[in-house]
Length: 200
Image 1 (cartoon, rainbow, N blue to C red):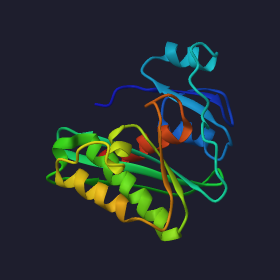
Image 2 (cartoon, one colour):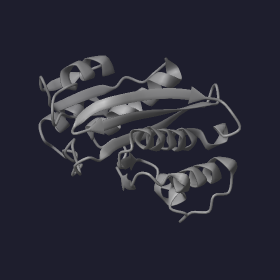
Image 3 (cartoon, rainbow, N blue to C red):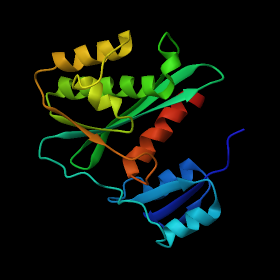
């Protein structure tokens, strides 16, 4: 059974605390600069709304003209050994594409990291098809280090990811680390998309 979560909305169509992701989406979707975060206890959620130990602002991106922004995240189900990714593409502060998919294959032992690698690759593929530069916002540092050849690629997944990124020459790709679960609007969104793809 899933643990109870409390979604604190600090800035949105309405400020307050709700208990489901669907309610949180309804109060924040389409609201420019929405700030929200999930918490395991109601007290923490209330503190967040009231400004105690507030997280970083929802939009931390300095958008470059003509550049797409992609947020990616991965998830894992230890019971089924399936992993998934969540991905959103943002253009000029508007979500133009979002998707999530799950997999079960030889890369399942890498758990949520496998999902995030799949998500990053898909985001780059999407941007390349449009011919637009892209900034990849990720949780796991390997997303950047493997792509740049700074970490050793010691399996087929990371090797294939590194080779794919190297093969993309029609766009510029930049990487940006986002602290996990810090109330960043799109980071929370891709986390939920990945979980939705995995658990339905």
